[in-house]
Length: 232
Image (cartoon, rainbow, N blue to C red):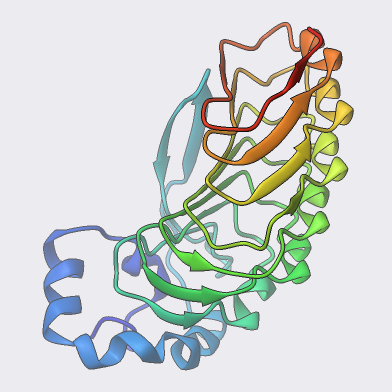
């Protein structure tokens, strides 16, 4: 069954088809994913191919485990997940891909322990109900390539300057996430790879001239902010 230790987590990375059908039939299990996540870490694994390729802002992906049971990708988007993100998730240190978007009842904070996912390259959190503040520890995920936050309920606050440490980032999105103040000058350090930068619908007031250093940038979205000063 879906969300059961009888099925290895590698096979729960399905959207639509069997995964969605079982989710509908087993709706009472949706709020119990915290308990079952603990069993994922202990379960066995099978070897399958893994690929996550980036070409500009496009990527292809297949979620798998290694032959020794390390989970590389976890896709649980649009699965009706409820409650807070369990702390056991942050123990999956081999994760390179994590998708939890479109779970509207996924609540609570994004814990600083997310910094333990040091291999993470792709993180998608869209249309959840996360609260609290954005942890500065996000800047420690230095292998990140694709980073997308949309429509969360974070407390208003400034953007973490530590994001300037994400030197491999290609796609960086914070839409409707309660960001205030100025875009940090440190983002100008992301000139090697960054091609898509999106801060749509926040409360940002200014952006620094250092953004002019982003020579690979193709898209910059600043609509529906409170920009009163531009210096580029």
